[in-house]
Image (tube, rainbow, N blue to C red):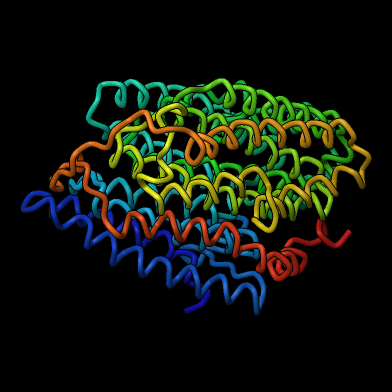
Length: 497
């Protein structure tokens, strides 16, 4: 039964997602209860799987009984188990937010669960081609969710996302073809073995495959200058969708990039081809600075948060590219913590907009007294993003900086410190507006909730989501030592150097 948990994690949201579509023929109100039951089961399965991996080691399952490398293999180790649990828990949390915020249609919840299935599949697959399949499922569901906004700008943003996302996925697929031609296999573990046996890291086929696959995934992660789909998608989607995709879509894509680096090409490839490592580090550093600089210049709070993600994922990819134990642990911790923090921040902006109409930095003036709980949670999450201890944002950045110092990557250290100051600049500006500026926007009158989610009512569940996110941004720090130990045990030889 334990060996079948990975496939159950993928199948459950797919089956659950089909039910709201069928039920929508009768009533649109059936979608949320079905999604809730599905994701409660998903969270339970993911928790059991993460506990099993933490206590007994890696779990693998050969789909259809066909053994790897010829069959499709699902593999869960410490890293993928943590990400699968993150996907399940965050999806369930955002669903609690969606209960009041909407959208409420059956097709929306069908797409919601399909996105959960795609993200989970990306997390547990042990095959580079099936990673592409789940990457496309994730993309198609995300495009549909972004387009579910009521304004025409949401459809335009979704179209832009679709075009750029398709280019990224196509690059990744083309890279798979080159890698298959070079090795004759698609299984990740078998690829790592054959690449090591061939010792042909400087082969044109292998180098081309690496460039195309990494390039395709950096589009999905939204590193600068491949980020242009992200601000429009985050700012124009419904607030439920913004919170959901900002927390998970780029996060799981960054995980997939890390899996490609460490489980397919391995650290030996990065050592043998230093130009590949430094190209990735350079791209990450440019993304860190450019994202921070663009965030500082924004007036819209949601666009500011979107550009902040460009910077933060640059930080994560820099840690993975440095590829030392400390840097990888730091990048992983920051990756998981960022999902919680950024999802909570977007949820908080949705509450503030619903209660007051404020969407800009200046519009947040005096909101600390008008929406005290949500404003306080927003402030805590903002400081956590900056890296103020004891928040998880500090721990992740600290580990990455230590990893960079140990390898004498002083340019990376300088970029990280400069980025922290820029991050402080735009988040401190928001906190100052919340608590130390005179209000300039008057609250809108309360309205009764409506079925399409366009009303201004805010439920206890919505507020609870942002409060829990703020609490987790601090509490997760306590779990870092145990998580580091799990990583060291389940990702050899990288973390046993």
